[in-house]
Length: 294
Image 1: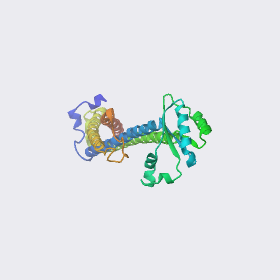
Image 2: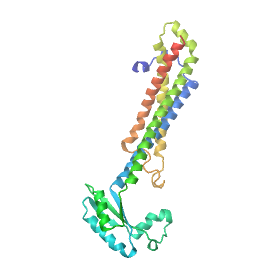
Image 3: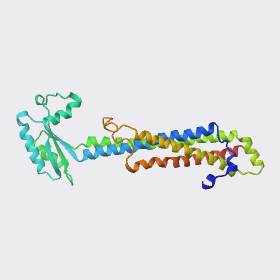
Image 4: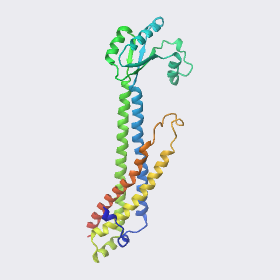
């Protein structure tokens, strides 16, 4: 690869410095790298977001207590006393009416008459280290407060983990498809350039030029064009990612979308990868086309 990319002004004259193959190669590399930046950002952000949600849910659980109004406070106190003596439970508290009203406000509005509705009492517990025995706690709750149901948020964590895995897979699959598309477009551009210079190639062969010498000129020119286009595309993608609205402005929907910390260094790896793809695609296309022109 190093020998192919070594500057050779005489060989470089074989490839036209401008034309549709020049801008097609540069534009394709830039556009594909731009899309790769967003696919990479999506893949990383989805993993961070789901991990943050899963970690928050993993350390907390909720006990839903349903009881007649005249027994609600007594059973609530019984459940809190039980939790206070349960190994693995760090803290436990019953949510107030105002907190339950805030939880239901997105669906029923802020003026929900909590006191007039037969709503269950919610008790929040935070898991200690080591954690508690979920099955044992359920059995104790069944004995002390038959209307208490433990929700350890497993049904919430599992879909989040599955969604994160699928989003990450989608991101990496998108990057693979984008790289394949870029290689195919550069191959077409290289074939077009080789076909347009068929007469020049024949003359070069007549004066003793070998195919590796001719192919090197095409590989060098197209690889450098792809590197330049990919660098511009990566820079544009990073700027657009940096300009995305923050979590406060987006209402939390875009929380974590983008790069953080050393993640900002990952897009800088895309231009060299684009150069490798361009090198492999152009070398294969050049040698194959030269064999056809014999």
